[in-house]
Length: 219
Image 1 (cartoon, one colour):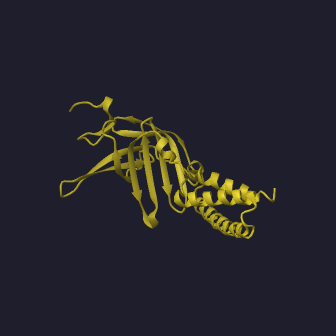
Image 2 (cartoon, rainbow, N blue to C red):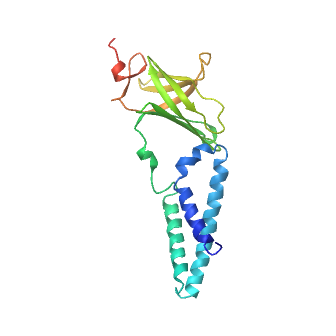
Image 3 (spheres, rainbow, N blue to C red):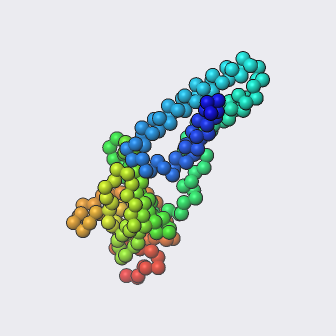
C-alpha cells in the first residue's frame, strides 16, 4: 500500500479535478478552502514528480514501475495545468439555456440564473464560496414561478417567482432585467441583468412579459 501511495494519490487527484462540476456547488463556503487544499496537493505532486525524475535519472531509467508512475504523474499534472476545470466540459451536455441572467456585486461576487428548455433552472452564486440552487419552473402570464427548489449549502431560502422589467435609456437603447421576488410583499426584488434569451422559445412583448410562444396573444 505504501509503495503505491503516490499512484493512488495521482489517480485520486485526477478523478477529483475531473468531477469538480458535480460537487463544488454543494460546498458553499467550504469551496475556497477545498480548492486551496487541491492547489497545495498539486504543488506537492509537482515536488514528488521532480523527486521521481531524479531517481529515474539516477537509476538510468531501469525501474519500469517508477517510469510508469512518473509518466502518469507528469501526464496528470500537465493536463490539470492545461484543463484546470477537467477534461470534459459537462455543461455542453446540459439542456439548452433559454434565458441567462447575471449580477455582479462587490468583491467580484456573482449570481447567475439559467432557465433550461426542459423547464428546470440552475442558480449559481460565487462569493467566498460556491452555492448552487436547482429546481423547476413554470410560466404563467408575465410571471416565472419556481417549483421543487433544491436549496444549496449556505442558502436558507429561495425566491418564489420572477418578473421582467424593461429600462429605456436616453439613447433609446433598452435593457431587460429579471426581478426575483421572495413573496408578494417583496416589492423591490433582486435584480439580474438578462444577458441571453432564445427568441425562438421565449419572447418579450411590448407589455414587458415573458411568454412561451404558444401562449402569445395578439394585442
